Image (cartoon, rainbow, N blue to C red; front, side, top):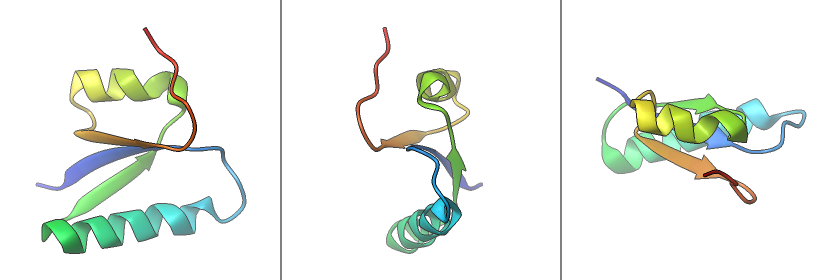
Length: 65
């Protein structure tokens, strides 16, 4: 079963390449498949709390309750 990670950052042209790089490098380090999903920061903690993602990577502040 793959490890699912959420990634929150501003969307910009080419961000998909960064998502793929994170997935590839993390997968090699952990020796398992890693799926990285782009998330809006407003949805990130809900994804983590619900179990949809096992981890989050954020660029910039993440404001939540």
